[in-house]
Image (tube, rainbow, N blue to C red; front, side, top):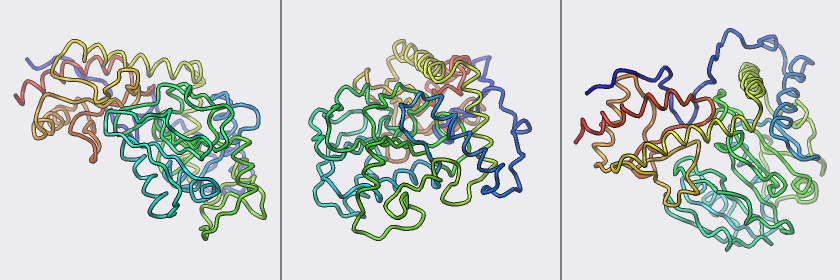
Length: 370
């Protein structure tokens, strides 16, 4: 039978993600609009977003936060072009974005001393095999595979290389061992449901030292430059961004940060995401026609939850279409390069009650296509 109730918010996209509960565009602080981002009002707004990010995440002393163009992709590209090349590189990749970084390192930067640690969708490579005398590039959460790094125990405290972590669907949703991470990138349109086009870079003191002591051999586009005259461009990390940011997007990000603070901070956001995953986990346990793409349950993502169905690829597409037509769930198809299946966002901006309402519809749609 057709379920009686529907999710109040059917937005389960894995990026851009659902807006926070109670979001109201009209309530954004728009005093910066129409003003120069170089004026005091613009710089202050950018600096507040930077400072609040550091405070909510509980970053260690000396870690710097910067807002950069190009979303998480832009942030990762800036880091790789600016910092790689001094040491050999070990890269771990188990889904499409990690594969993109591998391609950039080997095909664009053309680095020769590269060790790859690759795994298929649903699995993790052997992280303990990574040589940490080298720079290490990896994603914390495989957004397109639903497979996350369970912890940072494999990262050595006495590593010689830098750990460069793409954490775009992990920050504000998963516990991050900051002291083990030298560079962290993310975008606020993921976990916090912000607007796109901007990325965030977090640098440890070790990362800053690398930037100030190493000059890559290749030409550096202006938009990628993080240093000038051998010194870090401090303005990036204090409110003077490299290019003109959207101050409306910054106001939207500030709204999301204020919301995280209002619910109890980062730990509360992480707990909310974990509780959301628990809703889906129970459903998977109760139904033999659906399962996590992740083979090891300790690596199941609590944000971009990827699911496989006992159905053909065409049937999966029909399930997705049926749910959208019923205004029950939007944008939940697997990423284009991933195996056919569902990808349901479970970050903190999603309510557990909406996930609970979605579950009978998943069963209904699956039955319809059999």
